[in-house]
Length: 97
Image 1 (cartoon, rainbow, N blue to C red):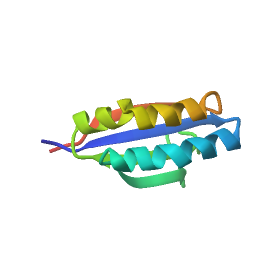
Image 2: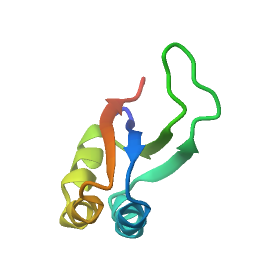
Image 3: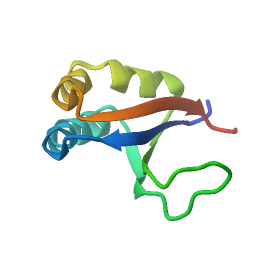
């Protein structure tokens, strides 16, 4: 079964306190769900219409594990804490086997 990657790109952050509250809840929820944070921070370089924005890459053992972590009560509480503090998109991508 191929691994899966949770890729989150932040388009804007409007409330650092809400982002910190999200991080305090979200990090443990993701790790509890089997996620391994591979990269996080502002892009070092951005090409081809890219934007130097905060990006997070998390590895899971499968798409199902990534989805289960996202849908968990613990992660949903983190999303509630974030609220309107950031605009971002999150994608779950299956790895190449």
